[in-house]
View 1 (cartoon, rainbow, N blue to C red):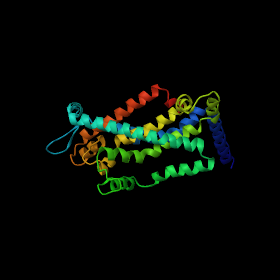
View 2 (cartoon, helix red, strand yellow):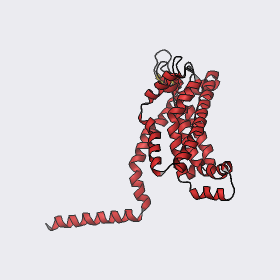
View 3 (tube, rainbow, N blue to C red):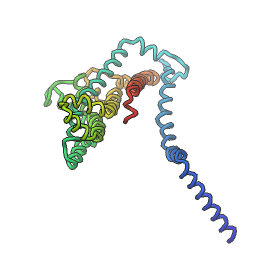
View 4 (tube, rainbow, N blue to C red):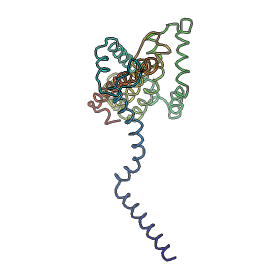
Length: 290
């Protein structure tokens, strides 16, 4: 009994010491809490990304279709010298930029009305309405646009690059509205009142007060719409007609062509573009204010 009681006292003492240590060292406590998520992130995301880059330097045997795990720059040379791939990359970049700008033009006034003009009760309902399209299947929404854009549909515009931009703009619009709404909701109304008291009209108030303070939220929304559009391949398959984007080249080389190394090399293009975009955005100081 004495030995057992002594063990319990020692165990309780160790727990109290550990709790006191964690209470005094917030960084250690935070590291322990984040260790499991960070480990999963490292294995599932960074590990897969590393495997992608490694595979991009391999090749495929043209006769057997087997992977040749020998270092080569042939895939990147084909990307750099092939005019068709440069055209596809520029087209994909243009689509991503167009979708982001269209969503920004639509989302900003909607988010401003939600954050500054609607009542608190109406705000909750408007947020639900913005989120509602996200509950529907991606394919259902994409095929709905295919029906509307078909020659005998409601719009009848046909398929192609314009149809792809319209479809993607609709699909990713909530991802632009919600960050801007969150940023504008944090904007104090007193600043708008002060600008009006000082004689600033609507456009000047927007240019000098609203836009600078909401810019980080716009950047957050643009990261979503830009990256999602840049890597999408399903929408262009459904409504793109004969148009091809980067995602389609990756998909076709994984499936029909059975050329995984070249698909991995193509997949590095949007990754590099996003890294350059994030680096450019970070220099503006926007990410630090998110």
